[in-house]
Length: 297
Image 1: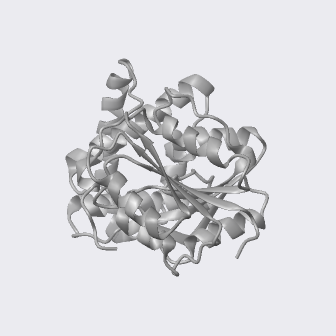
Image 2: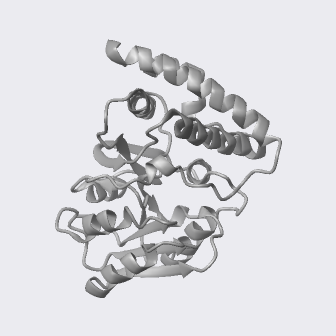
């Protein structure tokens, strides 16, 4: 176990169906977290039972701290609250999505990797939950396989599903930023720290289960990348056609067809993003409904 003072941050908006599984995972022996590890959950404008669920866990485990925002002000605002809470009291901040599920030992793995390397942030490998083998599910699996190969062989593209960040690297995120992960990656790189990827640490994630939701999700990702590129010139590694083609060579033959379908959907999402980008950029996204259905971990 690492000697670094560690805190965990979770941003939650209407995650009643999923937050219990995550918190149970974090406080159980499976993760073996330090006894002094704070777990901060920002419940942002929740209109369901998320806050009540977290509060019940807090009664039995004093490491859990609930921060309630009566009004939803966007993820950047919620993250900034967490940053300010841990900046001076922890060496490492672990961020985990409220609907994700770290596999046993994954948190200690990324924190230990941060301790033994010069990286400013280390992230785990996101792997979709097993689901029915429909077309959308197969496309999603290929997308995340490509993300894995690009991060492993070309240049790591930070994934915020589960990552550990040195608190010295934390900088406030502007409220108008549409996607926080690439902005955090940019800030870490600007401070001279490399991005670390640890595929042996795995976090299970919920993904769209229908084509409509998948295109909607990919569109908003593209909008965030376009915004950051225009503002700073920064381009994430997974946006590079060259990187994608190189990573595609690693795919199994059975995945090529779904990679092609994914490419068609990506073009559609990119085109929609180009049109919407001319309008006001939202800093609060509507949840992708099919990713919020509870899945047995």
